[in-house]
Image (cartoon, rainbow, N blue to C red; front, side):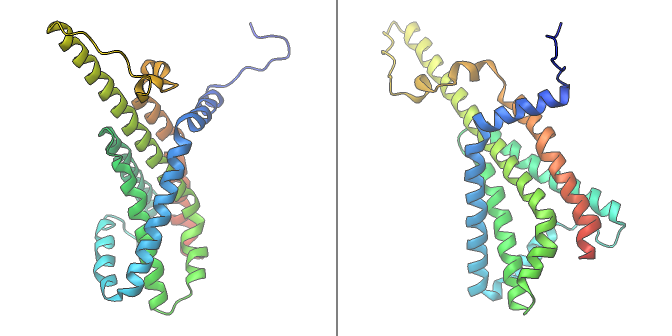
Length: 240
């Protein structure tokens, strides 16, 4: 029974409270890394195509081919749903790439997205168009939500990559210890400087499932943000 005056906590509220704790405890540091990668990708892409305008056409054709399944001539609803599917698939791939331990492959996603933004701004500038207007009307309205989702998905993938790496190292150390015991060799004393031994959340992390945490966070945060971005891009951006 709840104490007098207490209100029951709904499932959705509890899930987002847990997500906030996961953000503070796991994802926030990776989000900052992903944001820096996005900025670096933008600067590299913009500067490169600004000084190499001859490469813009080839790069733009490559980007357009990756979006060939998006039909701009359809209804706003079809466009929004297609954009949502495309972006959700790309974000899911970025998260799944985090399954590879310690390679941190998801960082390539914000680097690529930043490079594409740099390309678009460079093309706009070379064509003599209004760059600030492009950013304010065609990128910013939906980009606030879409890029936040990209960065969050990247942080999930980076967290997963590190967690998988720590588990792989722990399993390898356990196997090596058993191998020594079978060979009759004494096990070395634990190294207090070893990050696996001193990692503050090691015991708790072993009890939880990083993959389940990532799936929950993807459903609660990434997909809703991408859905909002897609509907803004489908219904509002064309009119701006």
